[in-house]
Length: 548
Image (cartoon, rainbow, N blue to C red; front, side, top):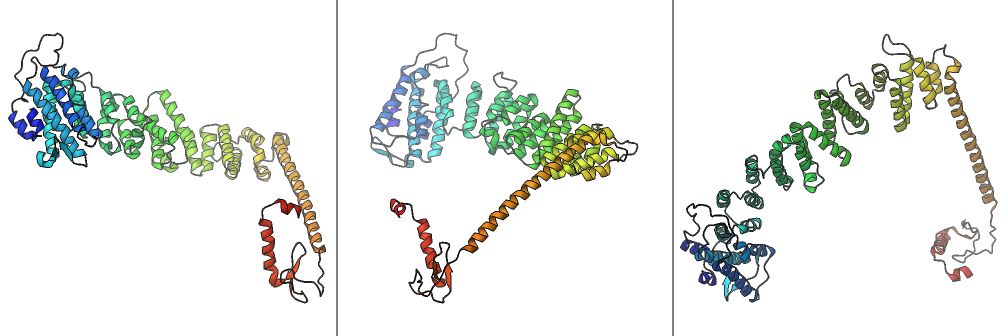
């Protein structure tokens, strides 16, 4: 085999001559437990042979190998790894020699496929002319190398499969399945991008092998990016149905993978699989990620309603009712009409909020006052609206007063007490003329005394502001008049002998321009003098300027 390595023989030729070495031996009884055998002379020779050949390449002034090639060397057998041989008999020298040949050939092929410069070995250029198609040769070598490791040193199976390799997936599956090396097979599938095969294997192993659970599936899915969203959704359904925590780990963790998933597909999927998880996901979008997509906000409100309707636990109903009410009040990105049509009629407060969002303020206040029998909530609603928009809030306060004094529903009596409380607390924000027109004649002055006091205070404050403004405007008018008189008092005298400072000619009877510094020049020279003034104002301040 060392001769084959020295002449860089094609791998298919050597493997053809070694036919039978990689075939499965007949089943033999398991060996008795005892200390593991020490490495054989042939195995140690395989390692030393590879090292010698690596040194010969290094001494030949060749370019350093790429990271991929370095990874390929990591799968070479060592004395420690070959010590863990799980066969009853030590490997034959022929098999060990084949291993050395395959390792050396793999290294050469890796350098050919990764280096852009010519590669020489013992003075001979290594090229595709020797090995034919490089990828086909790599596939043959890697697959055969795997079969060697299985028979000589199973501990090196994982390192080979975790680096870039060209092993035949069908052979890998067959060989590793016989040994029940599922982790190595899953790692191989991941490296090859055969994610569906890996996930199907995980699903098959779940329940058969306690080492593989739903968490194993979720962990694998977390390694996939958004391009595999269909696989993620397909294989996450069962784990989520088994435990909602699996869904939280996959979709709600603050990771780049979770945040990169297409939100439309995730929401549609979660709505069918778990309403609770869909709610948590949408809450995360609305409150933490500040996603203002109307569809997501609509979905969140409708899911709250769904949970309220289907829940049999009163505490859950109350919890989602509070969440819905809070969301309807805070969000401005849902469609009130869409949500309103889904809200049950007995959810009065939520309906009132939605009616107000649709500018149906009177209907909203009627619900507060008569359906909920809570004029104070109606007052609080109008007051909050005034804080956001004084115009709408003021109108809402007057509508509420009208509803309290002249009930729109038959059989309802005026609520004078609530109306007086409204005037007492919110009267300063209301128009006194409109209020007095709504009050009946039998209302005593003493009952509206707080309202009248607030209006007097408002009127007094307005009058004081007007007086102050009038005084300030008078002072300003006097100041303007003084400036006017001072400006008019300024004059210049133009005599027959006065000269223009620009052209140095007599001003005579020409049209002149007078500047603020009382300089007089010809009208045609005004621009030139103005440029002189501009240059002086732009000139930096110096000691010479100060002396002048």
